[in-house]
Image (cartoon, rainbow, N blue to C red; front, side, top):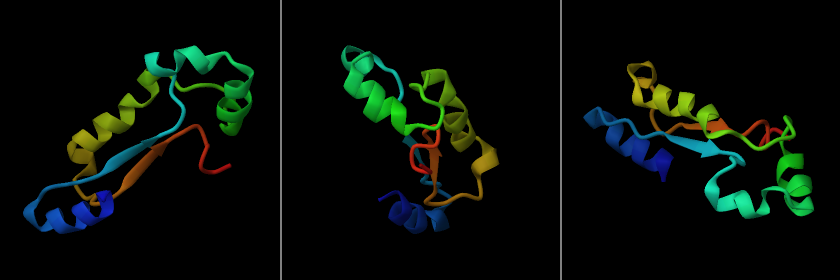
Length: 86
């Protein structure tokens, strides 16, 4: 959807891009954060071996909201500590 909208709306100077977040420690997943399953499956799947902190995703959001991303259309910025690369 991001790619399709990015291409469709680019001629109107509307940029559509997105962020693909990895495992970030939020209130929603606090109950599972310290379980063996989460440590093995979620945290173990990142190259950094830990949950992301929400402040670590803000740079991508600021970048996409700034003029620095003005030549991007339909792109996804992955912030996942190497989850996809692994």
